[in-house]
Length: 491
Image (cartoon, rainbow, N blue to C red; front, side, top):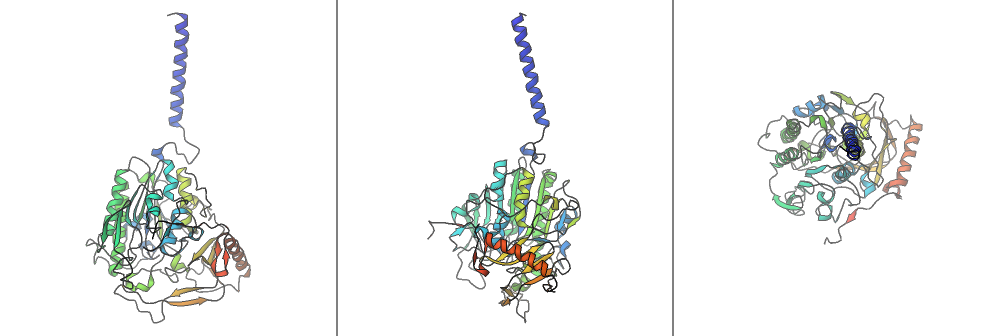
């Protein structure tokens, strides 16, 4: 071999060895972000979100006469959160907060959007699905959307690859007990197409479950985000024959048992596909129970009031998280957290970038891991209701209420059993009230006179929130609120 060829042959060998070495190092290195080095190692995310489920409607949270073996097992194999809250105790607002990491009033989403609503969640806002898409995630929603039913606001316009479910609440149909002539037929969507209008919802939970399991089976080889937003146990209550009459708590208990079965089916699908060690599963509810429906609503346990109020019964929700091998088993976390914290936590776990717009949630992974000494990363959580009313602020164990009007059950309340609600009475909170939620979670003893320094501290935090997001109770417009988008083509 000539000197020329020997020289170049050696160069080629050296270059080949260098390339092989770099490839080897690349295959065995990890990125700086949470040890993620390729798509296959990114964790799957499953959020199961029920509708109007009370705090005490799960066995480990104190359910009576309702068996929830799958949720109880999930708590035994994961972490139970006893101090987890939603930012707003009503449907659309609660969902906006969950999916964007923002207080819903910052986004201009209030109350429960209906078939007449001309606006929805702005496409300028980023949902969890949109945060995860650049990281290679397949995203799907099964169930209730409720952030705008018009075409520009559907889930497929907000980062979700697939949508199967309802555009709004399941009572927004012609069979509403109080407004039978107000709502059109209830549409069932597949992506952006209405594939059916429902007159019977008995198989809705079953259909949602089958679609969720199918999504997991089809996407088991790549990272995915599944948002399973059950329509139940929001009224009207429907249950399949599999669970009809199975509980000792009437049809409401039957519905909860079927939701528990659904959770079991989802977890079984993860296990069957070998994904349980690479999937974070979150179970929670959008707000407390709709108490005026009597036996067709759930239980808040010891907590005061329910859905549609800022008392603990309206905003404290049963929450369980499981991730085999990553989360401790059978732990109880009593530190305060909120649904707005899920988006930044998921971004941390997946290496995703946070939205460019300001969000309100914080990464709570140390709380989820039950890390020793971990505390809530928030100075305070702000509880808004109605159209931008700041009704309460929570900081640590303390909760300060501001004067506002709220609904409560009438004094002569007898639980209706026929699915037709009673009329609420309206009460006025005329002065600020302060409660120590650790000593008095039922909010029975106003201690504002005993702790003026706590009152002043929380009021200072609230004043900062008023400047930021506004407060209709005090006529203050926030400096950092963003308007929802309206569909200009809608009639």
